Image 1: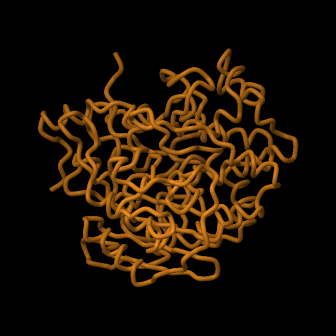
Image 2: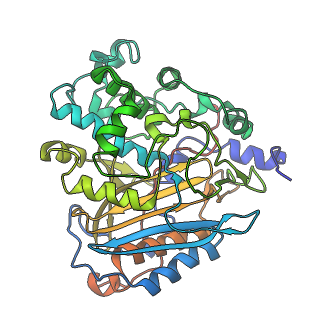
Amino acid sequence: MSSTRPDRRRRARVAGTTAALAVALLATVVPAEAAPAPTAPGAVAPASPGLDRKALGKALDAVHAAGMYGVNTEVRDGNQEWQGAAGLADVGTGRPMRPQLQHRMGSVTKAFTSVAVLQQVAKGRIDLDAPIGRYLPDTVPGERGRAITVRMLLNHTSGIADYIPGAFPSLVQGSTKSLDDNRFRHFRPAELARLGVEAEPTGKPGEKWSYSNTNYIIAGMLIQKVTGEDAEAYITRNVIQKAGLRNTYFPRSPYISGPHPKMYESFYGLIDPPRDYSVYDMSWGGTAGALVSTTGDLDDFYRELLRGGLLPAAQLREMQTTVPVLGEDGEVAMNYGLGVAAVDLPCGRFWGHDGAVFGAGTSVLSSPDGKRQMATAYNLMKYQKVGKDGKVEPSPIDAAFNGFYLQALCGKDAGERTGKPAAPAVPLPRTQDLAPPMAPRP
């Protein structure tokens, strides 16, 4: 039986989790001293060790054994590729997970939207350092519209708050009722933008990095403004089709059109047992997080992007110009560009993003030359628990994922090549579409 009314004590702990927890989730899920040291920023990965298919399969099975319902992946090393799957696509029927199922990709969408904006920058129709108020004066009015630049939207330094608390108000009270209330609700981009712009700012324009889906809804509105075309249609033709992707699309209904797993949401134990949200109107994500894709398509996209197939060299450099993202203790957890993140692992720097929508998670990372790649999709979200201190407690699933990512990207001999012992976990930061429930501000 689903639980939507947790006991008072647990509700208080979850509702007491603050917005700062979104940044905490960017940090490694293991203590820093337990993780292998990353290479210097910008370092190029050493010669690839190839794909150890047996080790990859074992590492992926460990993710399922740790508690993840189902997971599928595609790992590449040049022309070599390995597709794997573990666990269940449907826990009710026992249908197994398999590779290349369609999946909601959440904020991986942001890279596609950023590419579309940068294409317009290349054509001279958008100036990255121009105020957004020049283009959308009614969306971001007044002094903020004059101070916030297009670049600040794309690298999340605008200070504009996320619209999630406004669109899903029950989350502020530690209830998931809004998730079900909004299952078939259609949000307009202007409505989402207004919710974020009118909320209390997270900082002054350009002051600091603060993840906000509102930035990328406004970016979609900007695309429509300068092209005169619906943003999702523009992205489909000029990014998705240009990259040659065949299973990537913005859904036109709450339903996924191709074979897909069910997608289960726990919301830190508030939904018990976890509930399937694979049927959902994704207008709440829009150009910030609505895409459906497959792991193979995502590897194709990043390879095409990083090898210069989607943007001129000047705009690709802008996309990879980063700002630091600070973890809970003030350390640099990762570096964020324009819709892509740079993560430094023991074997070098990788570019990518992750996504987290109701029931569906995705992680994508690629070496700078697009040779070594990993795209992974999984179907149980917010499986962690919230401790008495109001903070999310790491799960064995997190450690298992990190072990798989290390194997997928660095190979079994990562320790030998870096001169340090290969640990079963790596410092892989994660962005989040949805922070845990947020306490009302005083």
